[in-house]
Amino acid sequence: MSISLIARSIGESVTLKLNETAAILRAKGEPVIHLGGGEPKSKSPIDALVNASALINSGEIRYTPADGTPALKQAIIRYTDDFYRRKVEPENVMASGGAKQAIMVCMQAILDPQDEVIFPAPYWVSYPEMVRLCGAVPVPVLPEDGTFYPRIADIEQVVTSYTKAVIINSPNNPSGAMYSEQFIAEIVELCERRGLYLIMDDIYHRLIFDGLRPINCYDYAKDKTENSRLVVINGVSKQYAMTGFRIGWAVANKKLIEVMTNIQSHQTSGPSALLQHAAVGAINGVQSSVESLRLTLENNRNVMMEQLNAFDGVRATKPDGTFYCFADFKVYGKDSTKLARFLVDKVRVVTVPGVEFGMEGYLRLSTCGSVKDITEGVERMKWALDPNSPNELYIGDRKLVRDWR
Image (tube, rainbow, N blue to C red; front, side):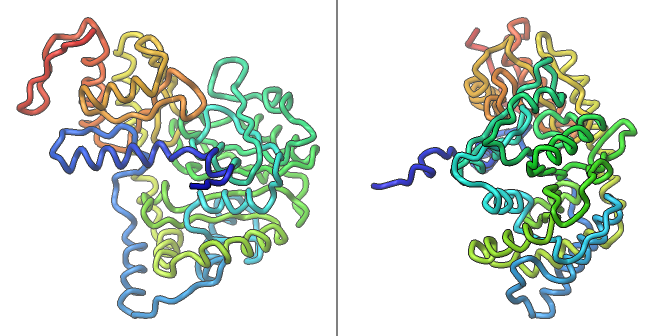
């Protein structure tokens, strides 16, 4: 069978595969704790559900424009004004089937084969594969100081004549690190000076803790014309706990949005009318669900840190936002894939190997679940890994006996 070179270079989505593994084990009655998930467990906002129900009841669910319905574009314009103090026009906005599609279409619109795309590590698992799908070259950058917080020098030293774009995801998946105001100001300046596209993946920008406030990239942009190469990505999945609705968007200059819309029109056509209607309800509706989710996640983050700080040998940096913790487990094994499989096999705890995010020896742990899941999940991990743990562990009525070292 003949497979394209690009297809051969792309691996499966590890996070989606782990979701599938957890679902299969649960269906078999296994007591799985999923600490690898990337979706909040709270219910979607009532305004989103009411809007969707109203459209279903009307029976009028039809094709939509390739760049999104006028109602959703108006909601995104309002959102951009509210949270970025940036007034844009409908031609600056494209809605997509999730923020992932918005990023993918943006890359297809700007990248040629052999172009380079820079992003700090650790990084979201899909960035390298999305770049490769365009025939371009991913360039991950590890902060030289060993932290999760890049410096402008880290980025600048890998910029070449082939560099076309920089992707910034802050707060960051998987580390939860929120990059400094100085860094965001400097990366905006660097991209403007070097004529690079700057893709700001802001999908977690309202889910931040400890009194921190979102950093607005537009505050540091000197070029606010239609020549700007600044692209802001967002969506309803994380902040509104609407992961299954698959609605995201891009805000950029009109020419780029036009090209992206052309590409999307041939890929998937416009996003679902029903799901866009729900997204309008979420964006325009009561926003208390976002703050409720944020507070829950902050508390869960605190519980996770307490558990990990009591875990001998594990090093965890306190996340500033998101619903992830990226912890160093190298003391128990430098092969994070092997370690993650061991934890699923022995104690039915699902985690995500750090190697998928560009940092071996780490595991990404999710705080999306309940406090009970976090506490019991880390306790099971400790029992499986720490040689000083008791020889036996009960999971419900099932007794586990350590038969490994």
